[in-house]
Image 1 (cartoon, rainbow, N blue to C red):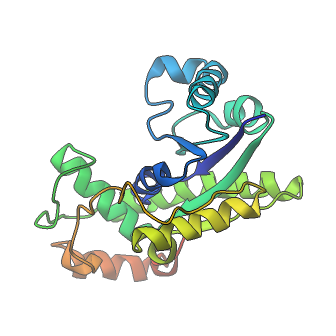
Image 2 (tube, rainbow, N blue to C red):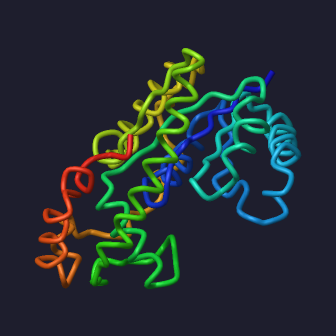
Amino acid sequence: MLDSLCLITGPRTGANHLMQLGDNFAELKSFPELFNSLAERIEPDHVLDRATAAARAEHKRVLTFKLWHDTLEPETVEQLVLSRPGVRVIFVVRRQIDAYVSWCKAISVHKWQEVDTSEVRLNLDIADFAAWMDAQERWYDRWRNWLNRRFLPSPILRYETDIDQPPEGALRRFSAAAAQVGVTLRVPAVLSSAGLVKQDRVKAAADKVDNWPAFSKALVAQGLEKRAFGYPV
C-alpha cells in the first residue's frame, strides 16, 4: 500500500516550496497542482487513484499533495480523501498576516510563482482580512478536531521555523513531521532541487503596506492583533 501525505494548508504558506524540496526524497512523488481543475474536484477519489498509479510507475512508495480550505467541500475531503487507506495529515501554516499579505501581493501581479513582489505595496482592508482569518481558522480547526477524535497525530510545519530555512534544514523538518505519522523519508547527502525562489525579500508586514498605521490601529480596535500575528492552528 502506498502512503500519502496530505498537507492541510492555505495560500502562501510555503507548501509548494516544501513539495518542490520533496523531490529530493528518493521515496517521494509530489503533486503540488492536484485538484486544481474543476474536473479533478468532481471526482477526487479517481484523481488520487491516478496519482497513486503515477507514483508507483516511478517506483515511489510515498506521495504528497495539498488541500486548501476552498479546494474541496469538507464532507468530500473526509469521505473521499482523508478516509482513504494510507493517508496521513501534516499541517502547514504561516503567520496569518504574512500569508495574507503575500496572497494579496500575488493577486495584484496575477502570478503565484517566479515573480519578484518585493516592490509591490498594498492597501489592506480590515474586513477582508478578518474574513480571511475566519476561513483559515475554521479550515484548520475542523481537521485538527477530526484527527483528535480518532486519536491520530497532527504534526505542524510552520513557515517561519520549519520551511523558510536552508533546503537541508527544511527537508529534515519535513522528514521529522512525516515520521510522526509513521512515514520514513531519508534526506539525501546531495540535493538535486533547492525548491522555489522566494518572491518577497521584504521582511516586515509594515514595510509592505501603505496604509499600515490605519490598518494596525483597526487590528487593535477590533481585538484581532493576537490572531493576526499568530497561527490559524
